[in-house]
Image (cartoon, rainbow, N blue to C red; front, top):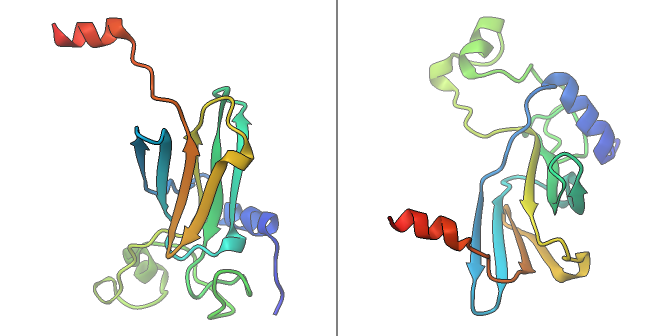
Length: 165
């Protein structure tokens, strides 16, 4: 069984669906007493080796943030040793009605595909002076927990005054 590294698998996934990247669900919360931002990102079925969390400056929007990047594969994936290894071949990634039209699998009324597979990416902005050692990251039970220290958000008085009128 071969073990492929992160980047070659991402390149292979992009050949299957080059224009589609999932955006995982995320909840954020600000604890005003401690000055801490908590982010909880849903990543069901993602293994640690299939995930990268990077503190970086985004070149497009020019903002510092945490990049959450990785992939998840279906149980019958063609990539042995990554996420799961239940099979050697995989039908094209299609929805149930398309699968029947192409002759794969069972009729649509007997098959249900709700989970999303493939590459995902999420960007979480952080204060410009945030350092990597100040960020707490944990992946547990399909939820990525991220926390970092942040001052109270500033609110422009002119905007808040105009909202009252």
